[in-house]
Image (cartoon, rainbow, N blue to C red; front, side):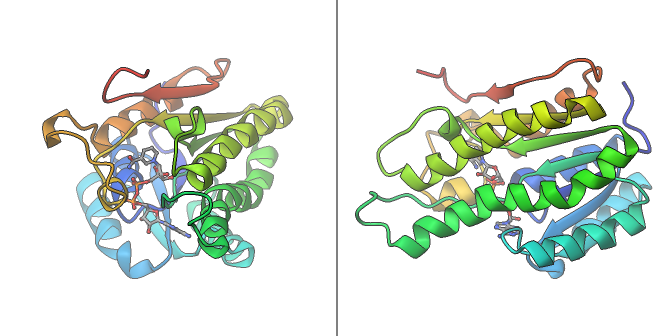
Length: 239
Ligand code: NAD
């Protein structure tokens, strides 16, 4: 299946996994709409994608946890792209601490960005996909959405919830030929992992953002009749 000339919105596209997905989709000939909190983070990427791959790339600033900012950003990107075939809900944050030690505002912020962000962007994009009677949504979850661990209550709760949202939404929108899938990578070599102290072993053994981008692309290339519950990749064997 060719993705050439399709259109995609990617959140948290300024760095890490989101940036790698934007680059790989642009390489495939997909026109992209990039969302991040500040558009200055995206300007260099926009220029390099259009120059290197000859696709159209647009940018919009929005905090994904803010419904009205998300609605405005999606409306502006849709107008420029003309359609939205693909949505990559990638924007996310991580912070770890025991439930007792983590202040309520920090715990809630993780839910607001990782879960509510996925909800707000999906809600803004879905009417377009339903009207088109086609589409593909990929939610970047985590192995932390399948297995809890000490200090992970907020992050794991947010990612377990994203998987629940994914399965439920899939059942709602399958009839419109819209596929909803989650990716569940283990630790990936990005700022998020490094800042959270998740860096394991030497860099060669760590999964790279480009590996997750390849998984996203493989999922998007599956025939529309195929639905993937959650596609996972691991650096080491899952226990
Ligand atoms: P990153 O910190 O390198 O990049 C995250 C991106 O999301 C950044 O561009 C950031 O600006 C953006 N973002 C954060 N909060 C936002 C908000 N409120 N509104 C808009 N944009 C926002 O992190 P990453 O490792 O590339 O993470 C991307 C996704 O992958 C996250 O959902 C994360 O939970 C998930 N994930 C990461 C790992 C890992 O080990 N790095 C593993 C599994 C899943």
